[in-house]
Image 1 (cartoon, rainbow, N blue to C red):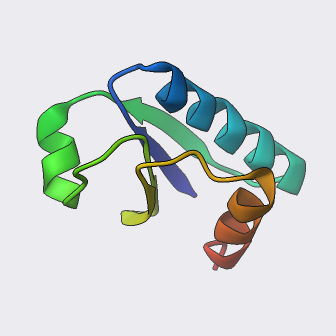
Image 2: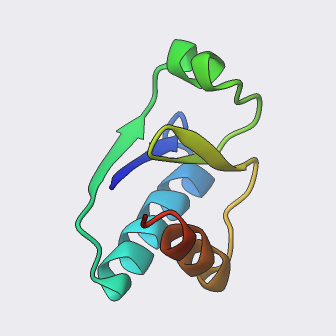
Length: 80
């Protein structure tokens, strides 16, 4: 599973990266996590607000840090 956290490195962006890593590890997922800081990449996904989470090329969250329960749901439903 390819996970991308889009964000410039602000506190919320770093919090999302930590939360995603924690949720993916707790689910035992095989994943690759990248923190993308390139603004042109944000635009290519249509992301206007960070932080954002992209799972396998699809934007799942933008503009907030979701709860652990929300992240678990997102990652579980994207497993296929």
